[in-house]
Length: 357
View (cartoon, rainbow, N blue to C red):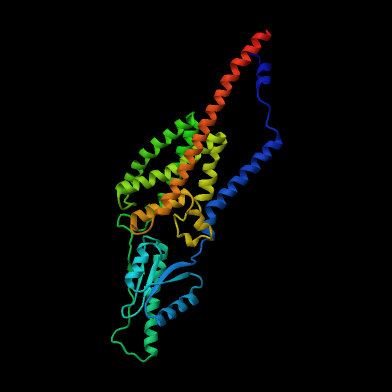
């Protein structure tokens, strides 16, 4: 082949206008990614944290007023009849902690629910003790020893994960794992039904492996091993099946549903790393309707809060998985109908061409 032929076959240089457009698009994409991942941290605030308060009405009102004045909008106060009721509310995740007033004042925390909130409530204990001692002194009550207010961690984190770092860090890999399964199945496998079978095998094997790592090795997960396997499997399936379903329905362009919906939108508002109350509302609540948020909440509840209701996250994950599989089946039947039509048209076209010849 001559040099002239090589020059003719070489692709023409990219137009300058297209180069500028590509650069602009990449800059916009990077900016959106930075905003998506940094926004929750920048805008998060300790606000409206549910806190139970139990004790005599006058003391409860006084403490609530003092906390509302010193930390406006930080707490959303919930009534508790006694300490047992407050503990029950913590164990069912209705509140993050409690203040017990009366003859034996105490601050109840739950580091398993949120280490950040637990530290905040622990810091209230000495302030509450100072307030109670000042009130008694003002009444002329002399005590042999000043009143102390202990802080009790009602639902502590496990010794194998004392800071909750393992449980928090597991959320993001689960999102990426679900995306990886859906994207690779959509790219490497032809046929919607075959893709569904592939991701099913993937999530079953991966869920046993990941649970073994997170629970058996790292000690980040607690509770029943097989139930945790089911939660991880359903989280992976909810994400991967949605990607496969949309891609089967609209083509490879549907793969973008993974990075856009699950990575840029759902992951930042999943409340996996902080309480959902810290996020600007209603985004914290909205995040629980997506697989990353529902999966993270479900694993935390299964590990530390067996009395907490888990129906909602199970239904959210099941719903996403079911929708994804239904979309894949629709894509499968549409592809079958299209192939049948093409098979009927092809012989007719061949016959017409032969007749014309």
